[in-house]
Amino acid sequence: MRTIPFFLICLVIGGIAFAAALTLGNDYYFFAGYVVLQYVVLSTAWNILGGYCGYVNFGTGAFFALGAYSTVTIYTLIDTNAFPHVVPIPVLMLVGGAVSAVVGLGMGYLTLRLRGAFFAIATLAMAVVLETLVVNWDFVGGSRGAFIIRPETIAPFGSYIRYLFLIMLLLAVASLTIARLIERSRLGYGLATIRDDEFAAEAAGVPTLRLKLIATTISGALMGMAGAPFPYYIGYLQPQPTFALDYAVNAIAMPLIGGTSTWVGPLIGALLLGSLQQIIIVTISSAVNLLLVGALLVAFVILAPNGIVGLAHKYLQHKDDDFVGRRRTGLEAPAPQVESSPTSEAPS
Amino acid sequence: MSELLEVDNLGKRFGGFVALENISLSVAAGERLGLIGPNGSGKSTLVNCICGTLRNEQGSVRFDGRQIDRLPAHRRTHLGLARSFQLPRPFVSMSLIENVRIPLLYTVEARGTRHAAEQIEERCHGLLREVGLEAKARRRPSDLTQVEMRKLELARAVAAEPKLLIADEAMAGLTHSEIEDILALLVRLNEQGVTVILIEHIMSAVMSFSRRLVVLVSGRKIADGQPEDVMRDPEVERAYLGQ
Ligand SMILES: Nc1ncnc2c1ncn2[C@@H]1O[C@H](COP(=O)(O)OP(=O)(O)OP(=O)(O)O)[C@@H](O)[C@H]1O
Ligand SMILES: [Mg+2]
Image 1 (cartoon, rainbow over the protein chains, first blue to last red):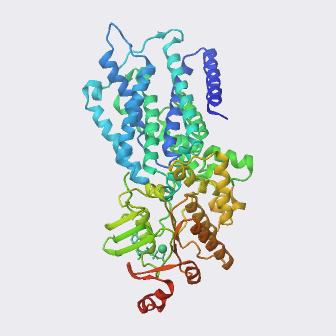
Image 2 (cartoon, chains in turn cyan, red):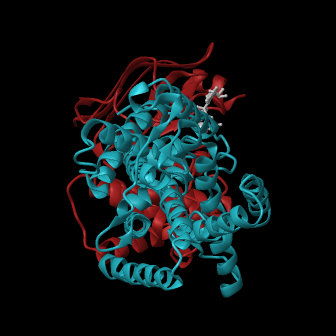
Image 3 (cartoon, chains in turn red, green):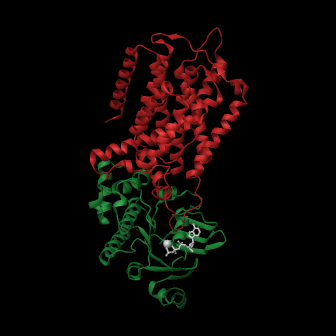
């Protein structure tokens, strides 16, 4: 299927979801759905670097928070009591996305020569550094946090949350389309060679550093865009919950549970796990969530390393011979060191 | 003949261990060079330094008239250097046809030749056919034997349409007739203008292929010349063959 029909079909499905939520007549569904869609974006974005390229990023929370704090910064700078909310949310998302993209590029440049666990640790460290900066930056509220008063309504959507939901829906559709496009492109092939064997990739002429930078930039940008509307959603933005490990853990768990080799996996993982978490929050307690995610993650890594997509393939085809889902994930053991294992890599 | 590859005083260490010392080697365009030496003598390390998988600490490497020491490996591949890895490093998540498609997408296209999708497909099949793997085009490397993976390595290197091809023990474990096939492929490439460096332990293959022979022992070059002369060299006999 071509990209544009795919995008349109996703839009139609999204539109149906939106209409269904409308008929339920309770804004709660929009609040819950917003979070699920946000996770669709985050896990799809994570998967572009983690699934396609094999680099595990623990900094999802930081990229997300960068988007959110870009919004707070702009809000504090520009919005006044006389003209509240002058900057439309789509513009805020572009700014948040740009900030995260730049940070993603910078982080990539500093860390992408690291392999495996070292890269993951570096991203975690970056998240801690950024959080410390924000906590100590009074302009955006520091550790106290920042208030953003969400307008009650917005024409023609009625309540503001419906508008936010719709925006996140569009971003989710856009993310899926981008991920799918990458998957089938020359870039996608290049990223897969990096995941499989970086030295062989270079020897075949793949400019590995450049492709990894492209992947971190796109991935970071999407995460930042997902974070930009968040202050409007939450109303009161605090550093700790915004930088929370929840985002990082979920953004890793959802693609792994769904399957990392195609755009479908993160979507399924985010829809399932995201909805399950929303149900648990209402029925039990939000404290159970991370426990659940952890347990599911362990179960899948052991029992179904190719995720739900991999399982489905196996049962539908009764062979997983030529199935892309056998692609290794970045979490698996690194390739065995062979012959004179190359140590230093050439910077381009 | 013009020099295609010029290695000058190259040195490489692993910690305190000197893997290569003062290696100088010129290879002219169109040559068929055999590179031999006992296990651990530094042959693969030399290939890695030439191709940019490893960095040499000393000396320089020139290729096609330009210094390439500081270039990342993929740039060297774009310039026309291709190698097979001694221990195969296939792209495990991809079918064989995709494995050989990568150099076409990333190297041949980077040189400015754009092919239509069907042409690329055709070329990939052709490459697999030449190494006897066409029947397994849609299979994955994990379905291959070690010997077949070596052939895939070679096909992937050839796919980059190199000026200089370095085959690092592509023939170990092959049957006699398979060796003949691979040798015929290398000779054919050479006749089309590709310079070939063959690293092999199978002496009959080396001797029938090489027009010139270089011997490495313990990281040093101890002989370089006509194959027959080199084989009669007492130092070579002592250090390598008479062990
Ligand atoms: N990454 C590395 N770290 C440390 N030592 C290494 C490394 N790579 C190779 N060596 C050492 O360098 C020496 C040369 O190894 P190399 O693989 O180049 O030999 P070779 O001539 O290709 O041998 P073979 O015929 O067995 O392939 C060996 O002693 C090897 O142990
Ligand atoms: Mg070797």
